Amino acid sequence: MARKIRYQESNLLYFVSNRCLEQRFFLQSGSETNALFLNCLARAAFRYKICVYGFVFMNNHFHLIVSAPHLNLNLFMAHFQTGITRGLNKISGRARGSIFPERYNCVVLQNDQVAFDKLIYLLANPCAADLVEDPSDFPGVSSLGMHLSGEAIAVSWRGQHKIQGAELARAKLFQLTPLPGLAAMDEFAQRKLVLKELELRCIKLSEARGPKSVLGREGVLSRTREQRPVYPKFSPAPLVLGSDEQVKKYLEHLHNVHKAYQKARRSLYTRKREKFPPGTIRPGTCQCVPHRLAGRRNKQAAKSAGGTN
Image 1 (cartoon, rainbow, N blue to C red):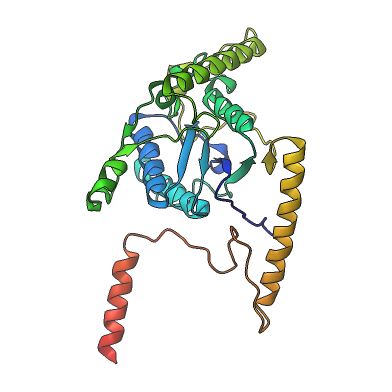
Image 2 (cartoon, helix red, strand yellow):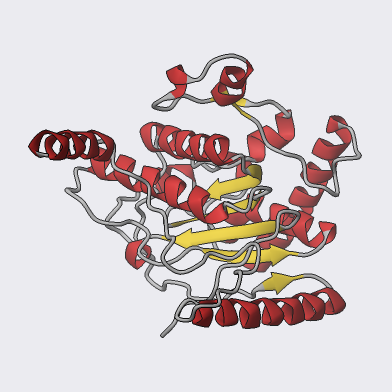
């Protein structure tokens, strides 16, 4: 079955998610793994100039709210997920193997209200999963603390020492970008609104839970990476969220993009080449994150080839 065409726009926000292999708890909370998740996210966002609005790392999946002004969300996700996979394989002693075998899921957020609702959903996810009563008790990585304090987080990753000048300060501090709908508000008003809506969401989740108890902080920490949910969840995600008119308009536009893409793809086998629509990835241009030894091997191969001529 053919994969869906990836399409990006520079002014849109995306709700990005992915689940671990067999939904196992590879993203288990811990001091070492929590630092790894933050550092990988900060490094990829810095390298590809991605705006991060919120994030949460559950035991077997993650959620991000991001935008890609430079239409490079695919490169950001490749770098980000590869960094997490390599780091977790090293920590857990796995020889090799992907932790995210499936493509990441990407939902377009068409308006400010939808983006804010998704942010609250993301922050309340530990409560919705019956892990903790209060999101602040969750031992995993979440942007909740950054939303409530308004402060950046100090991060450290490989290659950071090579950055100089004003960019070094931006590389060492991981800062969230305010949602477009909240950008006009001051920081205190933003924190107050987020906290209020989050409390209301958690109250509703608690009422829906009824007498059922949560796993608790210690229970979350006691999980192992080889465990998985007894009843794994499989719920399809929509392509776009917004008003009916916005969804209809976007789907029509996406249909036209797909037609233009297929026309350009067919033209690759003719003399008259058509241009691929902006925001799409043309066939044969998939870029992988290079291994740290790849550059050295390429130089050695070039040197050997030059010496034999």
